Length: 319
Ligand SMILES: [Zn+2]
Image (cartoon, rainbow, N blue to C red; front, side, top):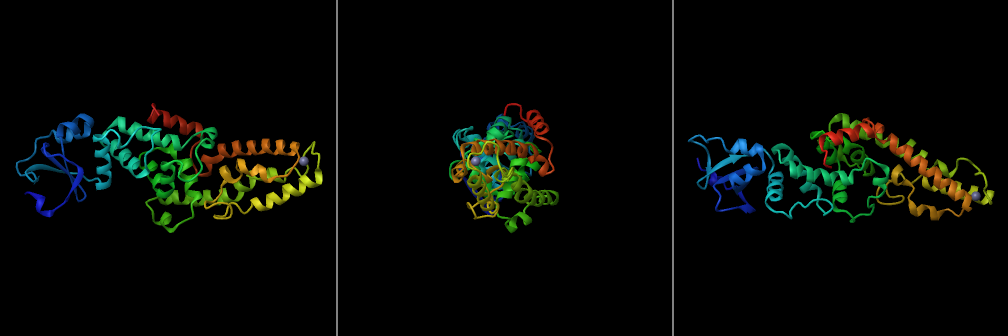
């Protein structure tokens, strides 16, 4: 049976007249080279080199292979295979929708080089150390992949779970907590247990953990060596009261400020305190940040950073 009459859409740029095989994903068809796909993917090699039955489906006279993948995933994946600049390696920029498609498909079809390229992009924006996290760009528009991760909302957690990439999860959950709890998180493909982890984590981050992060502003009440005790105490107390509202979306920035960002570099300029108080508080804040980072995986019921790093090493040693 020739199915051209059902009029699927020919993929732009992935319909090569000199090739003899058509693949269909969703309502999109691709005319590609059997040998090209077999060369890159052992799964396609095994699948496409099997002899076709005599009554096999055809499309415009070519043998037709139906894929169970979405058209978006197939289009992004075939483009990444065929065009050297469509999905460039880190640190060149990419977007989350392309990366997610390429990772899912390269994992499924055994294209190890593209899978490693996708994981290198994800690894760079899901650090496993505090120093690497603090070195990430924090502004909107500075890194299109980070912007895309926020737009993707729960999809990053879902992807990491599907492909057993647990080492991405602490930061993926953390970013999810920074967003307004939009109803689509509840209706997303996120597993029920992960919805519970997200909600429990969000309550802890915006409550107890945020509070711990700014304790340096009022504990101890007087800092040893302070040269202006009354003024410094009043300043620190006033600042602490103001900072308590920063965990609410919109009170400081458009995002909810959680422990890793609650008090940032620019906030030290808010404090008109003596140099001794400033140095002591900076040291206390640094200790609080390190301590929070160590607790972060457990907040989302995940293994420790060292266990997650071991898993990362075993699943993708080149990243
Ligand atoms: Zn002081």
